[in-house]
Image (tube, rainbow, N blue to C red):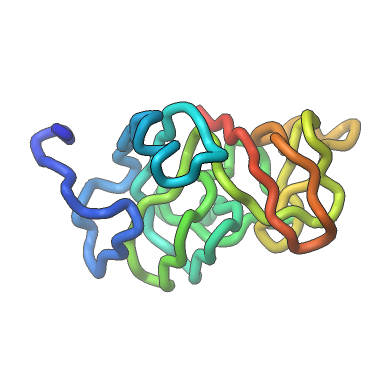
Length: 162
């Protein structure tokens, strides 16, 4: 796939020591590739290239680090808003390394035990999501496609970041 003036041939799970692509670069994974990777997922998926300020772990929500590059991320916290969230990690990216995270589309994310199918999801502590509660609409990042089975379990979510 043509990628600006470069061609992206590496796996999206590749972790880099250097800024191989400009931070904030996006890559669209076609729906057929998404379904081939996980048959319970659907639709195109948009990925964004980021730098890990602290280790980003599989299935955690990633938020921007204040005072750094706009695309340097860490585990989202309980007060992370929509505009601060960069995406969801689909693999571990060590601190100081670079890699791709999901910015938009179907993905797996860790829930805090309060995620219900069809309900908008917001960020909570430890890079997890939970059902949106009144007054916290600014933290909504997507919609749950299933219900969690308890704290720390995974849900499928439609991540909807611009």
